[in-house]
Length: 277
Image (cartoon, rainbow, N blue to C red; front, side):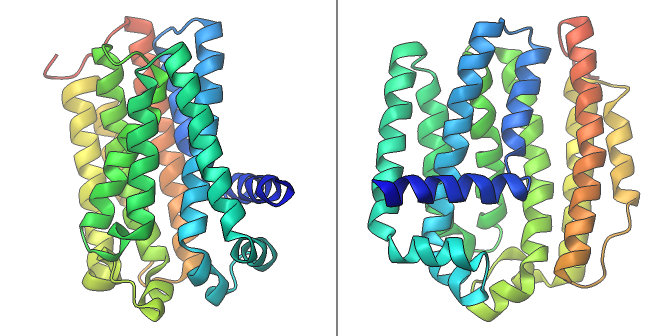
């Protein structure tokens, strides 16, 4: 039990330090834009935090051997490697707790639980080794995780999480670019390994334009086009991790500001206002 608790704590601290729970903040922002009542907002946020923890725990457990070989967070990774049974127990226990919560509060949350945790497991164990599929699976994950924010019958909520899925395409493409050299050494054939760094940057910019187009057509005809300006950010010519991480943070900041603009419009109007609306 002590080992399982330590593994959960280590994963939580590691991911928070790397600012990798952005989808939870996005889910909270969706709830605010939709005018979610405070008790509902708090309960859904707690569920979303648990779901994030489960997803990243699963990812770290699947990647433990590669992380150990690369020397990533060596103390945390070594402990996880030596206590893989405890890691599995913690995953199953967390899944059971979240499922019980969903059944008691809103069974619709089961969709976020099953798809969010399921996609993360299949991606970490298999899909990240297949070019194009790696990014597509993370787009679906980017839609699934924020589903905690609203009842499934809320159409506006679905419009918003699809936008988040398109942002996820940008972020995942940047992440595989960042990990290009490491994945190549490990024999993991990602999209970036197949295309090479330069072509991957072109793909990233295509995803940026797609995200801006969707925002313009569906959510806000004025804020949406501004999202296209993110393509002007200078991308690194090579897959140097530090340079790509800097670029990733710049893109997240720019798209994050655009996202806040979209949500503000939705909140003030009470609905979407794209060219197709």
